[in-house]
Amino acid sequence: MTSTDRPQLAVRSPADLIAAVPYLLGFHPTDSVVAVALLGRQIIFAARADLPDPSTDQVERARHLAGVIRRQGAEAATVVGYGQPDRVTPAVDAVRAALSAGGMDVLDALRVTDGRWWSYLCTEPDCCPPEGRRYDPDANPLTASAVFAGQVALPDRAALVAQVSPVDGSAREDARAATARARLRLAELIEQAPESDLLGGRAVRSAGVTAVREAQRRQRRGERLDDDEVAWLSLLMTHLPVRDHAWERTDGRDGDIALWTDVLRRVEPELVAAPGALLAFASRCPDTLSPKRPRQALARLWSGALIAPGGDPWNTLPTAISAGLPP
Image 1 (cartoon, one colour):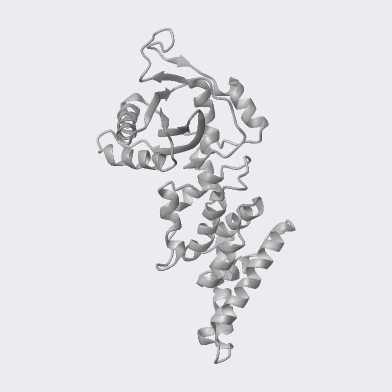
Image 2 (cartoon, one colour; image 1 turned 90 degrees about the vertical axis):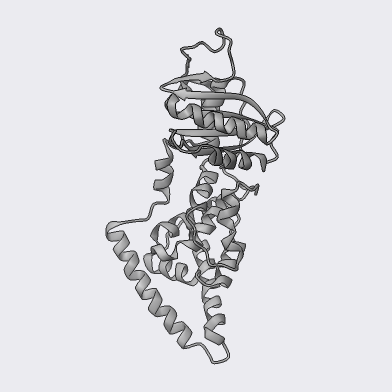
């Protein structure tokens, strides 16, 4: 799900809306159903879901998508389906019904297939001919305006996934070895803590605060953490006070996005929760959204993948993002 707190673009036609959707989402959708939410005449939000198999129950998926749109305070929505008609039509129909049942106006429902678009609601052949209307998003003035404003639409969702995919090969072997060294270092830190420091809690927090601040300083200087620094930081962030400190210092600047993306890609699988949550949180920050990255798409991508310990606020972040709660 994607906030649209970005430079405003004028959408005056279905073709304009279709050209705008990739910039609302951060990537070009395929085999998808997209709901674009409006408050008055302003687009305020866009939500996307994969097209389900036509043989499966469409209702629950449609209700979830409609619920996300409704929680944004939207008054109306337009539904756009991407793909072949046998898959798009039932999905669009289900989302239309769910939006209407939630009290929202459905302004239009569109299908985009093989370079043409059709409207499910328009019956005027002059406006919406049976063979559909050809469109070229690259030739649309809105696309040029979006690019001029610095907005980015990745080629597809796979390109977005690649931005946060874990490193592999020799880089993964180096990360694994660095994590083993960090575990020994942490055990030594706790062992050397004074008896008054129960389980070394104060020592771990102090080391964690230092590691978080140094990582952010290094990022501001344009320096990349080495494998041992990433492993040490990620291991310390398994401790709640250290995670909380990192959270307090993360406000959504480009540096935060770059730092936590890099750490996330290089940590061992059992340590992804903290950097993944920090990346999702930074991507979701409303005050400093940059049009140059599909930030909200990153937040949504990681919201369903985080595994956080119970009993602390980190456990609620993925649920909040998945539910489409406003920042």
